[in-house]
Image 1 (cartoon, one colour):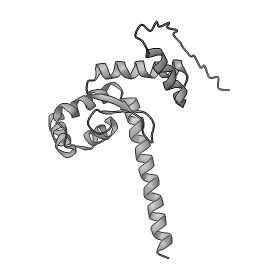
Image 2 (spheres, rainbow, N blue to C red; image 1 turned 180 degrees about the horizontal axis):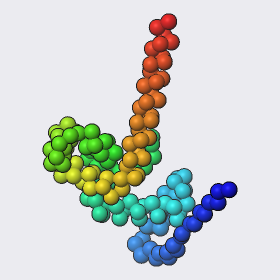
Image 3 (cartoon, rainbow, N blue to C red; image 1 turned 60 degrees about the vertical axis):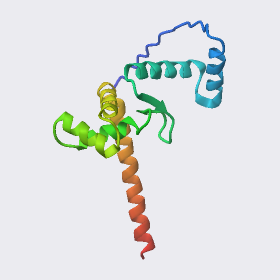
Image 4 (cartoon, rainbow, N blue to C red; image 1 turned 90 degrees about the vertical axis):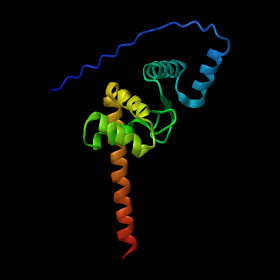
Length: 149
């Protein structure tokens, strides 16, 4: 017999909004179907803290959900995947990635530092992308096979 222990830890925080309009904007954001006021507030605080710790990294919506990316560049998972695939020293890999993606080495390092701190999250995005690519390739191959008969 397997017994699962699910422990959920929640911390309650009371916030007083002093700046005019902040709470109203938060309520509007939540009302747009993005979750409860608490969930949206928590996400925005988390993302804000991450962006403060990793300058140049922002968060954006997309087909795969919210994800970290460079303010003027690709998603962090894309850079992390390329860095993993390249060979050589860290400096060589950063230089090659910057050249291939038309980014500065500073931008690549910003993504790399974010990846270092949130590797589980970024690895999950890499895995999901690989799975989606494999699925698309299988559909394309099947289409070619079916249409060539």
